Length: 241
Image (cartoon, rainbow, N blue to C red; front, top):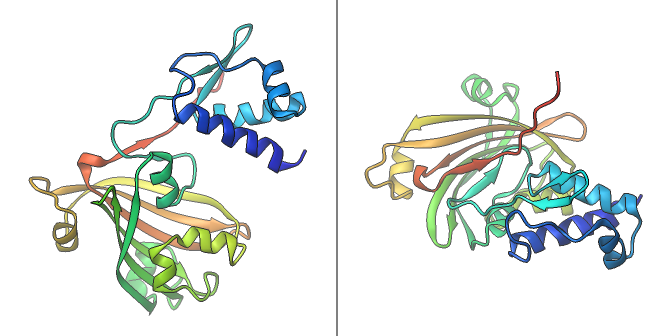
């Protein structure tokens, strides 16, 4: 089945849920209604609904239908299970994103960087420090390392917009999987300078190694989040034993 069809239905229903067209715990229109509304097959509707279930937006209930279980997060919310760019997360949360590049450099990984990031020693990398604003609040500092052999011709201007959009739309790189570790760490001088931490002296830190469709790790990023605006969400299911 063409991905574009079920994906457009998924995005349409997701948008209707996020904008409050369906109240929390309200049932979505019936399957037959959705088939008529979107002029598609039953399997297409079910695939779109399955994607919403996987993302934690709805829950299917046998004999009743599909129930909306989405509740907007009070704090800035990023997803654990999916891979989103900063801009995509901001727009999903109905916030205005802005990115400021603090440092853009080309480096060669030494043993210390290799140990921290997982890249091989001697790898040619782009190293970028970026300050992310949401609704003009400085909330996140990203330390990005990109493998230059994969992420070619990266520029400061691209880094100020969306690197992932550049990778997918210009370089046609498939961003497939990301391994993440979440920790709480003491602030650094850079954190203190740019993030307006006030009385806080610690940050929520998400470190990730991201792989393309060939299984090559092309990115290591450490995202340092102001704690009072930090919230990661996930949708977990329990498998029968």
